[in-house]
Image (cartoon, rainbow, N blue to C red; front, side, top):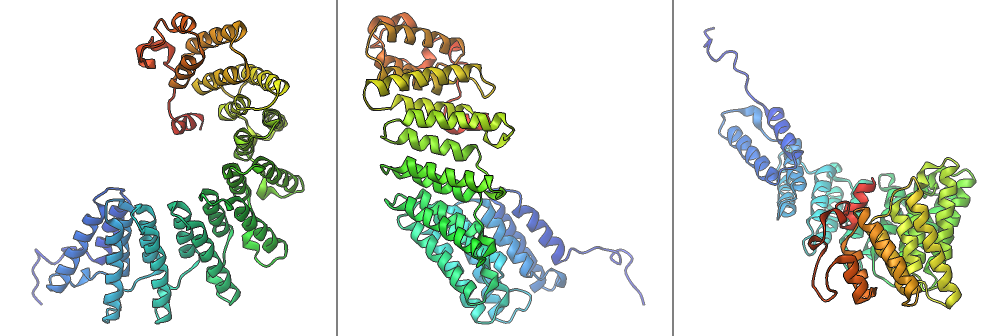
Length: 460
C-alpha cells in the first residue's frame, strides 16, 4: 500500500499529552492557571469533535486537572469556575459520556477552592459540595463516595472561616462522620486530624464557652482511644496545644489555671510513656501567655516558674522545649501587668530584672525592641515616678540604642513615662515633637524587626 513518507512518522499528541500539560499548569501557582488550563481543554474538545484528532477526547483526569488548576490559582472567582467545571463533569456523565465522571478528588479540589476563597458564604458552598457528593453516590456514582479526607476538608474550612457559629458547624460534620462510621462506613472514619480541626474551630471562635467545648472534644478523643472504640482518634501534642490555646484566649477568670492543668496532663502522659503528647515550646509558651493575660495575683511568679521549667528540661536534653525570645518577652509582659499590693509589685519588678539579665546572658537570643519596650512598661506600672526609675530608664534606653533595638514600642513608652528633661536628654528632641524612629540616628534601630510575624520568622 502506498503511504506518504512525509506524514507516516508524525507523532500526534493524545489526551495524556494534553492532560500532563494541564496538570503542570495546575501546579504552577500562576493566577491565570485556571484560564490557561481551560483553554487547552477547549482546544482538546475542538480537535476531537472536528475529527482532526480522535485521541484528544478529554477524560476524567483532564477535567480534574482543570478543576485543580482553578482551585490552586487563588484568582478571584476561581472557586466558582472550579465548581462549574466539576458540574460540567457530572452533566457529561449523566448524558452518557463514560470517559468523564466527577470523583472525590475533583470535588475535594472544589471544596478547598471555596475554603480558600474568603468569599461570603464560601464555606457553605464547600459543605454543599459534600452534600452533592453524597447525592451522586446514592445515585450510583461510586467514584464520588465521600471519604474522611473530604469531610476533614469541610471541617477545616469551617474552622478557618471565622464566621459566627462556625465551630458548631464543624462539630456537626464531625458527628455525621461518627454516625456514618458507627453504621459501618469505614471510609469516613474520623481520625485525629478530624478531631483536631474541631478543637481548632472552637479555639478560634469567640464563643464564651469555646474553651470548655474544645476540652470536651479532647476528652472525647481520650475516651475513644482508651476504650478502643477508635484507635485512629488518639490525641497528640497538637490536640492538647489547641485546647491550651482555647483557654488562653478565653478571657475567663480561671483560664490560666485550666491551661496549666492541661499542660500538667500532657506532662504526666508523656512521663508515663505516651510519646504522642510530648509538650513542646508552644505548649509552655501558650500557658505563659495565659498567665500574662490573667488578672490573678502571682501571675509573674507562675510565668517565671514555667520559663525556669523549660530551661531545666532543655538543659536535660529536651530540645523541643528550647525557650526563645518570645517566651522571655511573655514573662516580662506578665510582670508589666501584674496587679496587687506593694509586695506583689516588687516581686514582679524583681522577676523582670532577673529575666532581662538571663536573656542578655543566655544562648536563647538577645533582647529585642519588644523586650526593651515591655521592660519600660514594667517600670511604668511597678515603680513610682522617682530618681531610681529615671536612672533605670536612662541605662535601659542607652543599651537599647547600643543594641540597635530602638523600635516604635520603646519610643512610645519612653514618651509616656519620661520627664520632659529626660526625654530630651535621651533623644535630643522635645517631648511635644511628633517623631518616629526614622527621625533618630539610624544605628539606634538598625536591628529592629517590626511586626509579630516577621519576628517569628526570624526565630525559625
